[in-house]
Length: 429
Ligand SMILES: NC(=O)c1ccc[n+]([C@@H]2O[C@H](COP(=O)([O-])OP(=O)(O)OC[C@H]3O[C@@H](n4cnc5c(N)ncnc54)[C@H](O)[C@@H]3O)[C@@H](O)[C@H]2O)c1
Image 1 (cartoon, rainbow, N blue to C red):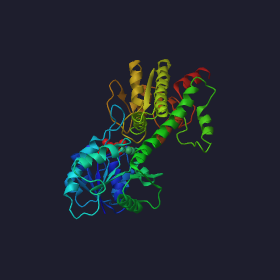
Image 2: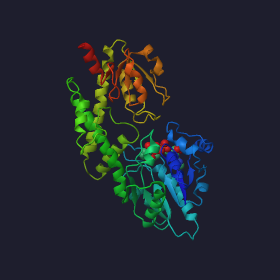
Image 3: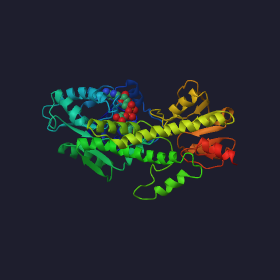
Image 4: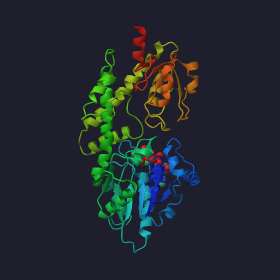
């Protein structure tokens, strides 16, 4: 069995390594020639995804190609993991998928006439509901191919978190497969049964699977916004410990603890855009999705609460602050939809002094100096922990530094849930 993986980015490359770990014959293609050259030399282009190294060291054998025609030869299925950026109306743009498919369609046509089975196209990129039926199948038919005879489609998105993609691939809670063709269903099961000992396979039709991907992420944003609603409702009430409240709420097994905790707004490349894409889909269906809207608006409100809170640095000793991390989570070099950049921007506009350190991201932010963690005291005695990271335990005993720990991850006399909390407690000490 020979599998072609198209698009070797943050999801596609770990996925190719993961598939290859089960002795499947993997051919991998990306439009980016520099990336292919790196991969051919055995360089892991996503060094923060450390678990990939074990695949490379264990002799995973992937054949890398910068020519799609050559990569396609003798394969029976392709996994497509190219970007699907959000459009202005917040649904996803399928243009990169279609760009790959226009070449794949020609190659399918040229396949031997004696091929009995359809070529399987497995789309792993996140698409908006309706894309397979309304865009992708008609596009291939427009190229002269017959659905379920020349090709068969699968929609198989993954639920992975950046920084921990390999674990998400190896141990998913569920496998979601949109498929309407018996041969393709048997084929993909054969692949996954080589990989997973036993798994919860969920076969849905295309529209159901497309919606399910967005619904799962949108439910997570609801949970996060719920927690932030609790936190911000008690913003001025210093006698209330929101963490303690949520800890009790989460004990109800119908609710659970995951995402029911004190923290920041949701951010990153998946949750915000999936929630907005669901809202856009509902709007297309003339349904006013008040829940997605509420999650999104509550999220913006949480950001505003943080902005207002951090403006209080003007009342602190050095009138400056250091952000410990500017990305949306630890171990991730992505700045996509991070809530830290709007915070920094806001404080800069208020002429407040801002610094940052980040071991995963090296970017220039105008008017904001990047420093080293060990040098913090030279610049400020106030640190904002942008995400959870065990390395931040460093601050728990640094009593000359006040720490704003909105995620409630470390304990110590110098640790505060918010800046207003810090100012309040110092005032009444
Ligand atoms: N990264 C994640 O954790 C994650 C999680 C769930 C879903 N997804 C979805 O997976 C898709 C890809 O995301 P990503 O984070 O891997 O993106 P990415 O930007 O990291 O990687 C995309 C790769 O596709 C390549 N590419 C672009 N056009 C191409 C083409 N025509 N042919 C071949 N290669 C092409 C790019 O060069 C790049 O290497 C998106 O739809 C995203 O929503 C990603």
